[in-house]
Image 1 (spheres, rainbow, N blue to C red):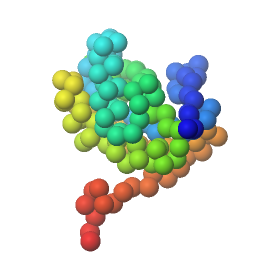
Image 2: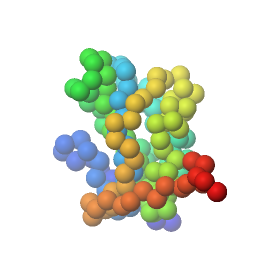
Image 3: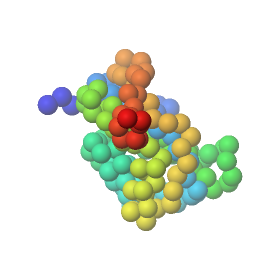
Length: 141
């Protein structure tokens, strides 16, 4: 079993020492101070289910005030740590605003708006193309 390792940099951003990072940025209509530890745990649980492949322990949330939006909005940078490229691709394909909002609703949390769609970053800092699964989105056929 290959494991992935991530650490948080001095800027608060997750970096990976091995494996892959799947990143997504969303905005939520909630004050940053309101996102306490139990709420973050529920948000992570919803994210894990929405991604379909990532364990709860492999999710990092970075919170900041969303200065481009109304007061009370919080910008949430979601980082999923994946051990393999296949796991990263699956997570990136599964994780969307729609899937995350569905799971957040199950947790009794508010919805989010996607600011930056999912991306994949390798341990050397390069980006990988997210290979979208057209069969999931109902491509022509």
